[in-house]
Image (cartoon, rainbow, N blue to C red):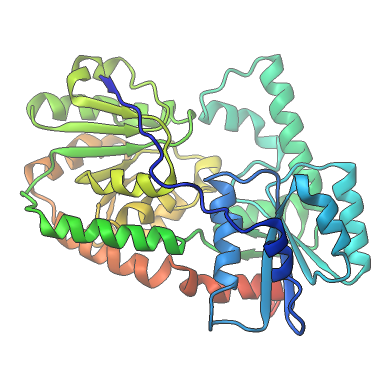
Length: 391
């Protein structure tokens, strides 16, 4: 097993200065939207804050809205803008007394307050399930940490006027927990991802693509997918035993487990990298596998692992959780694989028995039609402007 370093090739694009971000919501005659998140990162912040602001600021698409974002460290700046902000969207943030006061003050100034959340991490009734799914030891310290974090997120959520989530399954959990109206805004790709992925596709088209599969990718991201990967590790081992040219690329944190320890010379493990380099790595594989446990927590997650792969024409094989069932039509733009069927599907892929080229083409068409800033702009507008009646 080779663990290789992956130096970030692209810096994070959180470039606009605070002064520039404040200027964005100083445009007269616009509906001014401010997003708030604890600390910028390449996962939730990128998808639920940075991408949303980018979509709202699309040139030529909407001159009636201005949008920006702030971090918790910039609260004093946001507080000075009370009275200028029409909609405040607080994303996946823990309760503090200062935020409680901020919500009261902005609401008093006529501002609507929404909470954006992309995971089932606001209802402490699910702490045990979440820890089990994430393969965390439920000792005293871990229970204290997770009960506290989820309770604080839930407390802040309940103070808001409504909530935004990534899918209707998660929205139903929010409505049950907080009795708030909800809006669904799916995750989607930003402009830099789209540009970089187009370059990757051109490179792929310029090279010969032999039939079948020799490169399988698993992009775990966080160090919490050991139990998910267990669903496919034995199947992978059997397929790799029969096909000695098959290699496995893992990006992120993962214990591959005992089933694959005999294949160390054919497994490459890379640490987390920047999100544009990740697109290159996904594009270097023939198929992308997304095994998941099936429970309330995993059904609340989005389908981003599908569209991050489809945009570089890498077909996805995924567990049929709620979001993947909605995004993927089996055999058309991807493959839905039940726990008992991983070995057969992987074998078919490796032998060249699946229409991977056709699936890749249709997956790309689907992503370009649905998972772009312009495609989701109306959904974001519906939420921040409250332009429709929630059903």
